[in-house]
Length: 124
Image (cartoon, rainbow, N blue to C red; front, side):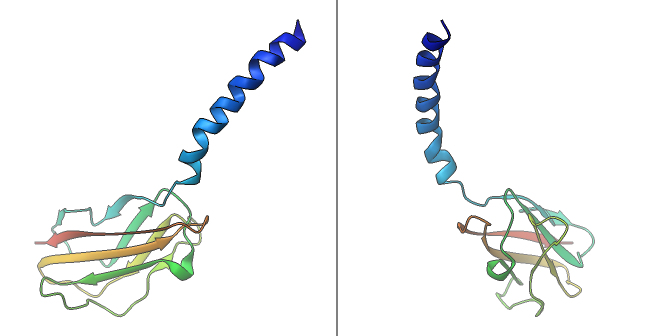
């Protein structure tokens, strides 16, 4: 009886493994949340941008760039991965005036996948 159960379970497990393998193999870093929020408006200018991803990040290959409405870069700091939570990437920014800002991020996750994106936020 035990041998016949194993004969039934083995093909089911193998089928699931094959079906799930592409999803696991092609997983990429994804921006889960941002402070200031994506396409959001804040009343107080942030001193730090904080982006949270779904996977741990490689610090050497993870960046954030901020530009004002004219496209001019804002600040000269480099983004840093939070040592306490490697899914968080931060960037200190100078005092931002009221206006709209573009955030461009690029990351490499712990499994060497690259991801990038952009979003805007506004300061009132």
